[in-house]
Image (cartoon, rainbow, N blue to C red; front, side, top):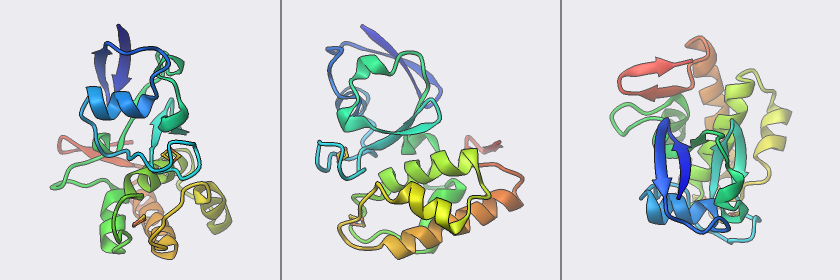
Length: 167
Ligand code: FES
Ligand code: FES
């Protein structure tokens, strides 16, 4: 058995240590936000956070996670109470088909938790790894900028969960 801390909860999974984290999240824990795009570490659809950093979960063996906390898009907010990034992606209509969006949000989340004052160049450089085959990159960048502004205005809160904001 492998123990993971996912979205603040301890989870035990019976998985081969070489199993990609993405498969464990989706197949064992029913966290289907992160998507299988290429399976080769080339598109970013599977991006989640591990230990505060963005990680391509399709090429990350679950055994490499260790005791570092895993955060997925399900851990940010809810439909009723979206996080600042989720709200901004909706406000900017950043999704077309939506397949890339959970990965985009989690990559941006990792940046804004570390640096909500990221410059335009820093945002572009950080987000460049994740691809959107619908081509909504400009709206996605606008959404990240909008979220950064609202996070700064809220004093650094980047999540919205259980009715509370978390710094
Ligand atoms: S599915 Fe992981 S990088 Fe494409
Ligand atoms: S919205 Fe379709 S892949 Fe990005």
